[in-house]
Amino acid sequence: MIKVSCVFPKQKLCHVTKPLLIILAAGLTACAVQAPPVAQKDAPQSLATQKAAQQAVASQAPATPTLKRKIALGRITNETSYGQSLLRDRHDDPLGKQVTDLMSKALTESGAYLVFERPDIGRIQAEGRLTDTKLNIVGVDALIIGSLTEFGRKAIGATGFVSSSKRQVAFAKVDIRVVDVNTGHVFFATSGAGEASTETASTFGFGSQAGYDGTLNDAAIRQAVAEAINRLSVEMSGRPWQTYLLKVDGYRVFIGGGKSQGVKPGMQFSVQTQGEQVKSPQTGAMVTLPGQAIAQIRVDALFGDSELNEGAVASIASGSLAGYKPEQLLIRFEGAK
Image (tube, rainbow, N blue to C red; front, side, top):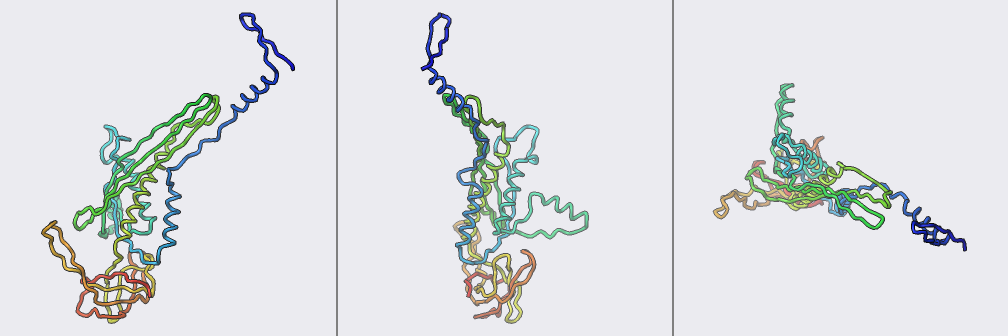
């Protein structure tokens, strides 16, 4: 066995075997291997996972019409301390505008709503004045109001004997409430949360390094908005499918709702009277009493070329609409023949 001698200040000799030197050198070489590059990590339920779950549920659901409710976005603001300063007022809220745009996009892509502009309605009116065009504003069924209530970042680190890691985490929470525009009653409220992170690691000073990643903020907010809209859609889908009578011409009945809302030839609907409205002594609010079914209609054909002007032509299968005006009746889905 070959021995290597070294002399220390006190002139004491030490003997190190060659195999031991080989092992030490191999260990140091292995420790200097480059760590994997920085990879962004989504929240436990990523946006892709949420969309896949929605598609799976939709494929298993029965083929029923999806009445697109008319909905508008109202005040969506940033109520956190992030991005606030003395030089900004309530009209200069970039984070609140970002949440509004993401929420409008999520509502439109869900396919369950007719989304109408409210935050930038002034710009639309100004454009109409340039061409002397009168803006025909459509009323909505509900108004969404909300805010970004939690938002922040944190760094989580861990240090070992020869290695260290650092994790950047962004968290966001959005709270929304849905208001009935006829009564001002808040009939549903929910929230959504999102988280995004990146992680770096190093060994003996070798490894990945990363600075501040601003895209984590956007990813966390986007996931929070998606979760809130998913919960809203579940609530709204549990409400009864109904539409309204447009016109009666003999045995032909014209109703609102067409191809984009899932209405198909052969579907049957129940025609019911509008229930009487009475004031409740308990709550002081107007209560609509149940109506009475007076006829059954069957869809024969569809018409229209956009979500706002689509409709269906139906024929009376049983019962009669004689003696009633269209505004006195409503249409409820009963099933396909």
